[in-house]
Image 1 (spheres, rainbow, N blue to C red):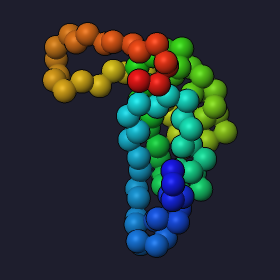
Image 2 (image 1 turned 135 degrees about the vertical axis):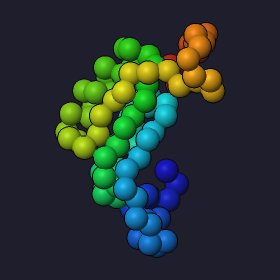
Image 3 (image 1 turned 30 degrees about the horizontal axis):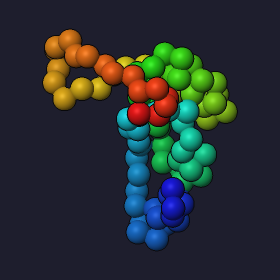
Length: 89
């Protein structure tokens, strides 16, 4: 983040009651969410191996958890999930 989240929240008097972060990757923003005291954080990650790495990284943040799922623009249908080779897309 270019501007730390805790600074943005303080400056703009934001009352963040939780975060749903889609596209977890390795939960790089976990410390920023913790420092900004945003409450519960749910991370969504579709790749099982990446989700497990994120869970390990988040072990020190009890209010943050990984949901292993794929998010699509339509419900109740099977969708094709394309995995990029760079691990972040």
